[in-house]
Amino acid sequence: MLIKMNRRMFLTSAMAAGVVARGSRYSYGADPLKIGFVYPSPIGDFGWSHRHEIGRQDVIKEFGDAVETTFIQNVAEGADAERIISRLARSGHDLIFTASFGYMNPTISVAKQFPKVKFENNTGYKTSENVSAYNARFHEGRSVFGTIAGSMTKTGVVGYIGSFPIPEVIMGINAFTLAAQKVRPDIQVKVVWLNKWFDPGLEADAAKTLIDSGADVITQHTNSTSPCQVAQERGVYCFGQDSDMSDFAPDQHLTGIVNNWGPYYIRRVKDVMEHRWASQSSWDGLAEGVVQLAPFHSSIPDSVVAAAEATKMGISDGSLHPFEGPVVDRDGNEVVPLGQNISDEDIHRMNWFVKGVVGNLPQ
Image (cartoon, rainbow, N blue to C red; front, side, top):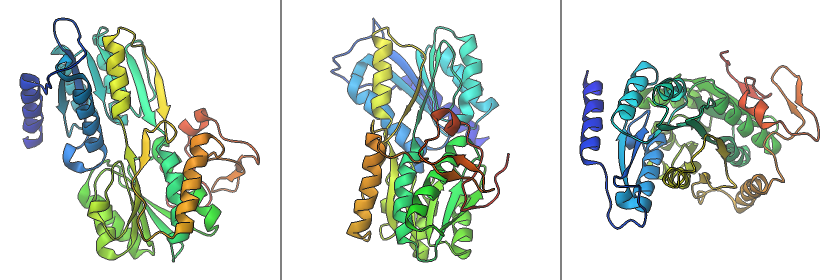
């Protein structure tokens, strides 16, 4: 009950006051463009929702009083999300960003009822005339992680905390493992699934379990800072998720993915204002600056930093592909032949582990 009351409170207060900055060079008719944002976890997670909230703030800075924005945080996926998205649409929002894979079907459902409203779903793949999908190539950053982890691990065991066994997460685990194997062929990547995006307690327990099983490097595809905090306490290395988490593990945080949604949000808001918004699917990465990296820790040797930078540069300029063949799955089948790369379509359908990944893969 408390969570639902908080959601209503956020919705009511944000809609009543909006967040308006003055002095904008933009305009959208007589009234400001009303934009809604729906987040799956609190903006204080210092991870996923925090970075989307930074993107919303970037929109406010860019457009000033030409926009009026609303955000609702900590919205559960499923029926609850559909009610919230529908409420935003009914209350006059012109553009609604739904920031989770689990919001995909609710977004599609609501969009059918409100054909004049424009919707943008993050990390989903379904589109329609008034629904776009936008995502980021997070696995590219995890290739850089793997390059570093292969050199920094002493035990040869890395712990990987997964949220849900969906292609977005699986491709990250595989890209990380393949890059690490180039440095240390015998590396093991142990995966624990939580079936949660954000649960600090479960994330902390998973990190402890992985460390107790021999992992001296922890990485994650979950939203809280707990794994990094555990890594700091236990003296093992970690990689942050979604934002720079180095403040939570100052001695152990090697680097992290920093999601930069602001430029995309600004571009799509401008498209609406200039009456040229159209449904699309966007999947940008290191080259476009949507996926960025936190600073490398001073404990990383210069030679390893150089290798990490080379991985980042190679992916950015297209000379290196995270899934360049030969790639062999865990059953010994050659999935990508020598000299070939896996297609984006097959990456989006990825439901298998590469050799070296330890742990179950629910289907």
